[in-house]
Image 1 (cartoon, rainbow, N blue to C red):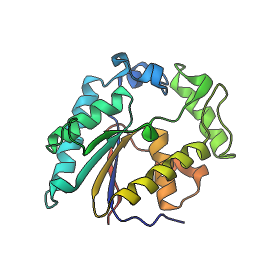
Image 2: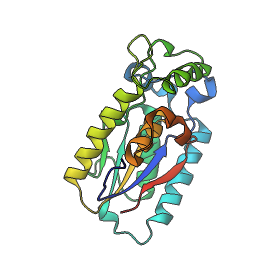
Image 3: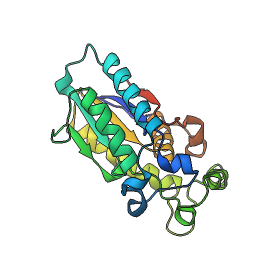
Image 4: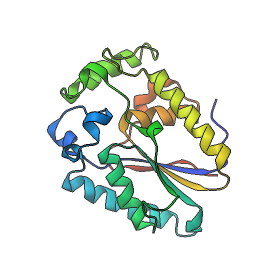
Length: 203
């Protein structure tokens, strides 16, 4: 069942990162916060374009009602900063928040391995959303649970806001399925490209 929401939500996947360029999986705080896996030059361009597009979409919206939430990993934080500043929101503003709930799904034993390993994880997802990658990885259901709690908290604390969520591929595809009430096993059908901005819910 789709969630009943009282705010407008946009989702944005981070711009292309240096990890994307290198073809490796980077999903943990330890590896994702150092700047060596931040945005590539093309990723910064994608973030700038996303910011301009969101600004256009919010042209008739009171900017005081806009909030930005992002994952703590460098590639998402940098993306969020670029977009937020385009909207006149800065990191010192209470409307800009870095939250652990939006961090990338932990891929366990595949951390720092070739990104073609995603396919092995997604094949399992399609059969069992409770199965987690070995080595401390997260299952689809575990990610969905933190997303449900996070959206619930946003809905409790906000009413009639315009909220941008800046996060990662699997986190956002799972978030999309949770909010829309769609099967979690099919979450990859809702995947976003790097730098892709999409309306999740219009209040």
